[in-house]
Length: 477
Image (cartoon, rainbow, N blue to C red; front, side, top):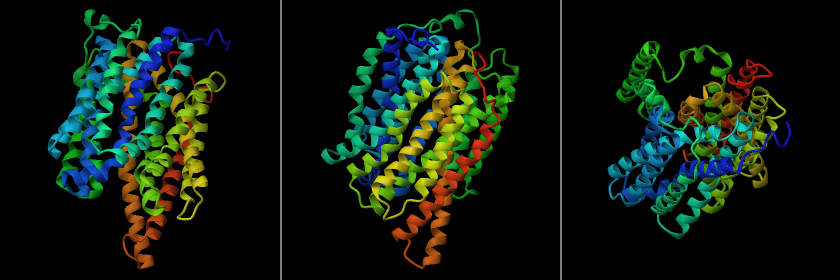
């Protein structure tokens, strides 16, 4: 492909830069993780209650994504992005001033709604801003922005906690959201970003979008509470039953809809289904790093919050570097083949993390984390490109939202699975060593077992990836 053929106009670069910054703003929520202890102390809550800080945000985010994407397809993605930034500024601002935990959680719901609108519009704005042959590069730079936010979040959070209170991790994002809101007017309207579908009488099918979002959220709530509350607890049972019922109703609604939010025939397309399953696994296995590695770095290795944040940011920083490289590589390598290479690299990195212990040189730890992040970057861009290309251009909001939803499913299931396995293995090691529950040796042993398990799971999905054609191309290519 020639440089001229691969060129992206200056107007398109403006769009990509703004939406990548918006994606980075949403990803900056990783700075909250390192503030968990301070938030727990401030509201005088139990450590177990901090999970609702994550749950309220993630479930709101996941449940609204598809509906947000469909609204953007009909009423305009720029409008949706602007509304999402307003809600984001409002949500983080309310979090910063909340004086009771219940109001803080309500503010997290507002923030989650804003994040859903932002991430339901940004991938579509990228793909609609450039010609089809340039989508790989454009999505590569967009994913670089999202990963950059993930990378600097822990570092920035650690610095802010050194200088100020936990409220600063929310305050700092209010002006950032408002600046981006002012920049949205600089985004040129794409050909499909207009109220054309609604004027033609095309049904919106918000019922279908909300049903599938609510069904997935009910299932995710059950998964997230299963380990702590017990799999037979009322909240888990009700969540699982609600998920089955809501998704069954969704299928019936979609079969009867003249214009379903997701074309059900896509679910019978093996490459499309595999791409979404792999998205769940790749993000779920990688999230074990966000869940367990902070404790390894700070509790076991004794690092400061700033140094620990820097180390924790290595994996997403490697993703940010690998994403644009993947975009360029797609000029020569098929989406299926590059996705498989990324999965293999991520699996190797996870196994390398499993080999780290209390005395492993930090340079080796950093290298293992970097390999995981680079593998995820090489996987995400081609996988996103394929999913976006599998759905018509007038439905790019739904396409981008679907990919983000699968990522959230991966995050929640990854946290639930890794937590269950880690707790089980740690209990075994405590019994074997006859030591105290907080012995670092038992933590490290369970930590290694967990990463060996998620690494093996990631490696197993490589075989699933081979179900995709070696010269796989998006359906609209």
